[in-house]
Image (tube, rainbow, N blue to C red; front, side):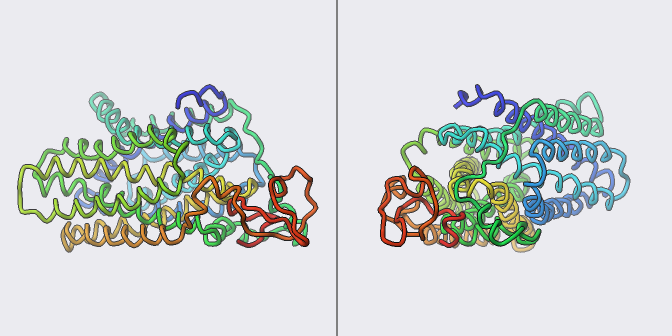
Length: 461
């Protein structure tokens, strides 16, 4: 897997991602302590609102950035987002009121909503070979998992020798370091692709900002595999919400364990995710994305059933080890769904629209979390953990079954690229064009079976 790091451009971009994630992790710990200093016992409410603002910024800003991303050089956009994040982090230690925290969090996460989809859309152009790209996706998954484990530990170590305000300095350094690493490489221009939307633009004129902002979302609702991805996002959001929001309740209230056991629970989730991320590059050489992702979603449902039994049981020393095992399988199943997501988007969206498609995935997936996070907290606090597990497990079940029904089997296999498929009208294309090679020439069209993709030659699916 590490062979992909021989590519200097990708190596610097991956390092930038890791450095920025580490800074973000330090900011998360520092922000929790800042909220407690400002609001005292109401710190939970402050953090909950800040989390909602974060998700709201992701949902609203990412599509807007996708609409204008093609007008700016990628490197300029990425560096600008990093510098904005660094400036906001520099201001955080000096706030004294709750509303100031909310404003700065919105600015910080808006910059992240610009950075992340643009970064994700650039990687397929940096690594055009699918095997390399798959390895990059696994490394990215590992980076997120390691951040969740490493950053809190680093923050705890730093807090033994400094106050939490200095952690924001680490965040600033992280974002500036990310910007320097991005500047150090020349990013490839977005590929225009054959039969891309450029031909459509020449016929219909420049698209409106609104049309471009919603282009990625409309693409998701038009292709079957991307509609299935929407359902898969909801299944993952249900599971991760239970782990993120209610792990502390299980550790402290249900099992009466120390605060240190919370790290053990979250570490089990991260370990499961990392194990799958390491194994997936080889698995995806033999198994389709569809098979891996749908099995991961169905596995989430089974784990919810097990967690329901653990939660409803009156007692027993077996429950704590069982919960750790369930959290590890949750992490593994979520990684089965999340890691191949970039491959699905890359194959489905024409090159010119990749940034819009990744922005739509970023926005729509966080819209799922915007629903499940409050639901996990409200039901767990008001009705009890059993009802939270039942409700979130029900959401995961409906989402998994929906994904299975929406994603046709033929679109999930490598054979789909060569089997007889749908036809489109004739177009002035070269004899060696993707749409002509290995196809049947009919009186009025070429018939072929490439995977569903919307572009200038396929206006509708």
